[in-house]
Image 1 (cartoon, rainbow, N blue to C red):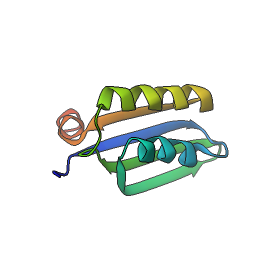
Image 2: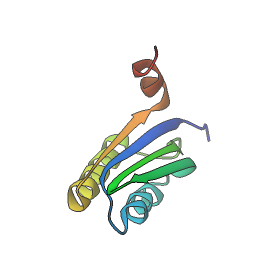
Image 3: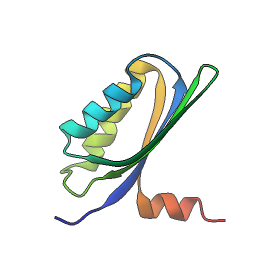
Image 4: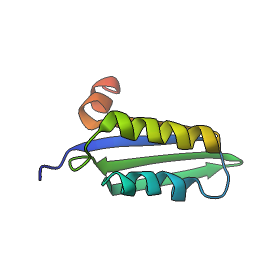
Length: 91
């Protein structure tokens, strides 16, 4: 199976369970976390993950599931394929 990388970003007010809920959605969709970084500055939570979406069947469905979790928890979650992320952040 070919590896296809994407970037997941999570931003919002910190609370218990954000990482668990996001990674549960990813695991349920057969997405492996390759790298993860998270920071809390005062009450603000940020997390960036590089994930392998090569085995995922439906990226739009993944995005919808992440949106649902984001709305429940009160954070913004974005999933972008690596090539799109790099093109958008090129200086």
